[in-house]
Image 1 (cartoon, rainbow, N blue to C red):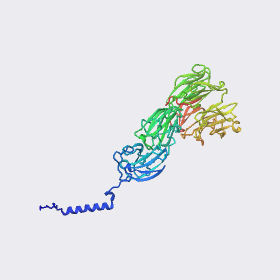
Image 2: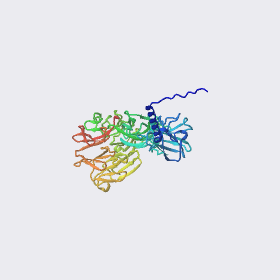
Image 3: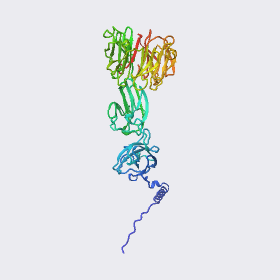
Length: 610
């Protein structure tokens, strides 16, 4: 029998035996009181193949991605590597736009939706990391009834926690599509919206060269020609932004576009707008980002002043009176400015009495884009007013030739007779808020009326008004009418100053007669104000916000007009004072003397596009 040697026995020191015993005690303690350390348990829906089914058109389910993993060949969701994904499956009960989100979850989620049979052959449907400043996620997509969608939630950079998953019909922004764009108005303003659950249309271009995927639209019609800046500063996500002209989403002409501006994730563009042109504004999210949109716009330009000066002639005071030019040394009979060729620069219309003017025979002339005066008609206009009477691009004119009757100059084409009667006075504004200017006229033998869209007549009174002005004093989009009647005439036979608000009847404002009146937004509220010259010891007053009257002066005024001459986005009052000259009353605070010669007539317009 062979000898069997016993195994070697290694003697341990007492200190080693104590250390081993302590380690065993710690391990037993951890197993008893912290079982998760000993054996982590992954969520039941950790893997694609074990997705938790959810059902119904809408609902909420809770879960967790604590101890979840990421499978081999599993894609990065919303472009993030994550590492702790969990899965659900949902069969769409109907075809509709669906929204799925993780609002209520307590960690930074990423969310994605797919179709496909296995984790390594998934077809992306929609994905999102953050909604604006939120750390939770939201997706929206056109679900097809009967289709199985695979929904996955992961943590940004491996984050984990409790999940709240919500699904249901998406609330689509009203301005999701080009055809349903939201209209914004005015030279300056701010509006808010969202591109959450918005989509991208078929044939819609990539804005600022980015595919986006959640675009929303606004329309803005330039109230005047001049430079405009539009931006998305204040939005809570990475925006892309573009401005177009055109009639449909597949026939757009790019005006300006931008992704990031001023080292931010928001966007900004600046371009020269043309009065009357409608611009289509699209805001999307960079690579499909979503959130709250803040849209800001401001149009900055300065009006120039055309003055009819005794001993000087027709003089233009340019760019806040930093320069001037004399168009002609003869005095004018009538003045007006209008952008009839729709190039963003107002043209000047001047009529001269017989025996004067460029050809020495009187007549009515046009100066295009600061060029020399060119004869428009041999007849001398007594009054000229401008407006967009047909809703087409470019301004139109209504010309009073006195005994030669009333005529139109539409679309920069030809002068056409309109009526044989000559009005005492006339004013222009969009009284019915349909995008086309209307004309308020006072005829000696007919009375005072509104000629809407050159087709509908609304009589205001059988008496002729002595002076007229039009402005939207309540800010509702419908221009209101101010009319002054001599004593013993007008509504009630009392005379005085009346206002017709919102296409309603004339109502008495004050029992005084205004010799002259003009309108403009002098305080930047978005509501027009009226300026009334009562003459004599009563003087000049401004009627602010259809609420209060402010006294300005009792000095004798020969002419007045309004326009934003200092690019402040507030109209300024330009008046001609006997013995003083042409005075610019800026922002109701600053008074500047622009020319020592008092003008007979005044007009304003943006004559250089600046």
